[in-house]
Amino acid sequence: MIWFLILYVFLLQNRYVLATGSTVFYAMFFGGLSEKDSGGPSKKDPSSAAIEVPDVEPPAFLAMLRYLYCDEVALDDDSVLATLYCAKRYIVPHLAEE
Image (cartoon, rainbow, N blue to C red):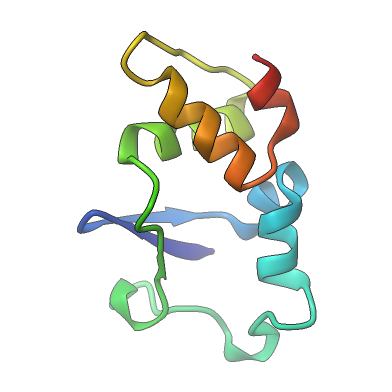
């Protein structure tokens, strides 16, 4: 499990699910620079090893997570461009095509 920090909100996510849907997440968690032996962050203190996501809007990141977990996406006029940016930034091509 991995923690993400998005505008002061911590999200606990499964790194295997994220890695199967995004080559960026795969490289981040299982590539040569990953912290394989660290054991991951503490569930009690998410700030110890949380991954900060400063340049993505929280609703867009949540929409991408929903897509990676459920293969569903709900876009509206306000979130479509931010979600497209997020999909391209984390290389989730099928979401970008939606």
